[in-house]
Image (cartoon, rainbow, N blue to C red; front, top):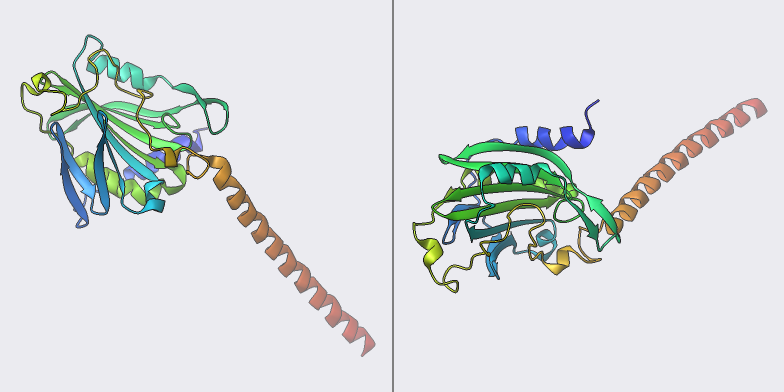
Length: 253
């Protein structure tokens, strides 16, 4: 029997229909461009571009991160595919226990005539977040773009992520890696890109306030469920009490 966690996100991927998004804008840096939701902004944090919603609550639900590096000996499409096919295990500071990601798919895909290694994980960067990885190589540059959203809100961002991925283009010019780091911040040549490369995840997505903390979500969901069950039981109990009262009145009459 196929796992529901495998079927669910793949059905969502099939639902990403390629229609124009009137509420999108073009983001472009020195090496890549793509359509970004109009209410999102991107900022440079070290060697990463971090994109999220301008609204505080929504900013905790989803994130897009871009990074690039000069190609090293470990950079190849084969190595990226191998790296993405391996589940990632790490100690979650939220749960204080080891978390192992689920690999949902890894494949080669072509976007704008460029080959990308396309990987999809659950819990590889932040617990309870789906993350889509797009990794590619061109003109001495290795590029990684990730699209992440909490599993509770994944459908909310699925179409926007689809548009971002379908409009993804490498715009880097030859010789970009020879420019000054202050002009084009790049990761070290010796680093590996893929799950667990050490992204600077915003702290408000990681702490007790963040959606990454499932324990902050589950009690609410459970309480809602228990409240719903209690209301149903009260309604059923009230129904039978009314029926019993009616029967009692009939007997007296």
